Length: 194
Image 1 (cartoon, rainbow, N blue to C red):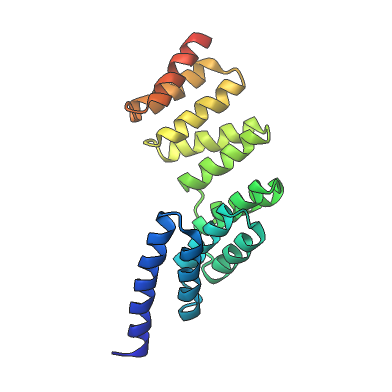
Image 2: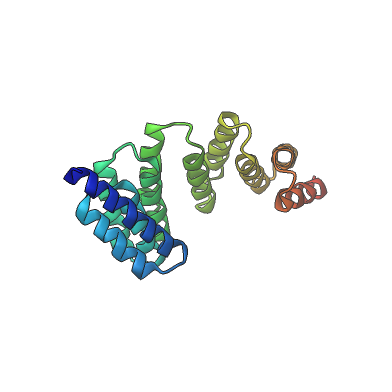
């Protein structure tokens, strides 16, 4: 067995241990395993991303950004890494930087459902309703089975008092996910407001 194969096997075993600890919220233990992985394979994308998520949960945002930026430097097409950088900037209230990284993710995949929902939600949070509506509308057109895109579009439209359009979007979200009680409540609320 070659050294590369041995290292791959070792990384797989360490990753399973790290992931198990991570899922059980034993973050300190998971962190140790992820760091061991990165000593063997400094480019291991999942270890970098998961280690960054641990630092995010611990509110160690400088370390979060350090590992995410390293991840994106080594894997420039890793959209979730860019989204996670944006989320971190949003968490520390650096909204322009957050938007910058969401836009970088959209340059790679302009119709990425997760990125469109995240940036649209951020636009809503900072009272840029028109931009939010545009994001959610484009997302719902690009992903016609995304109940979340339609529900968020309904929320954004509701905030602008565009009740008929909001109701139409809410109905679509509920059609897609009839088991989602929140979507059903949203639809009922909009019927009352109309």
